[in-house]
Image (tube, rainbow, N blue to C red; front, side, top):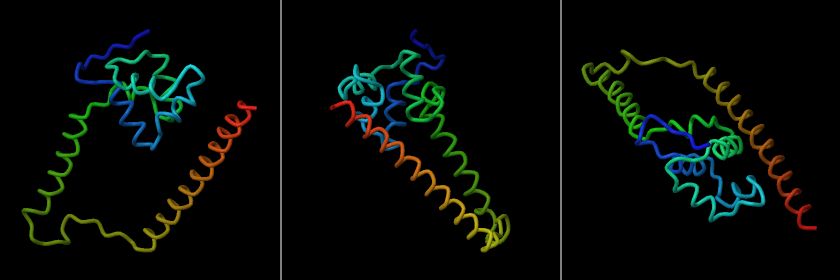
Length: 146
């Protein structure tokens, strides 16, 4: 069930590698999550494929907790264009006007501190959840070797 994309520049294997590295997932860890038939070398070969079998892509996306479409449709050139255009738009807003205050947003420092505190709490909660998931994986790994 190989999936075809309309954009020939999209390389699903490279996209998979980018997302895997973005989430700091090692090839060995991904192979472990995929099951006994997988190893680091097989993940490396998978990342070299231009098109990845849909079933495998869905499994990998679920492990990385991202939509499979993100891997299928990520186009580096488009992402760079979006970033470049966004940067260009922001830089041009202030270049025609020497007044720093025009066109800027005034943030309430208390609201910003509260927002940062809430983000920190959410981060801690995600870290605890990931720790629990990792402990579960380790227990399964240790339990499988007995």
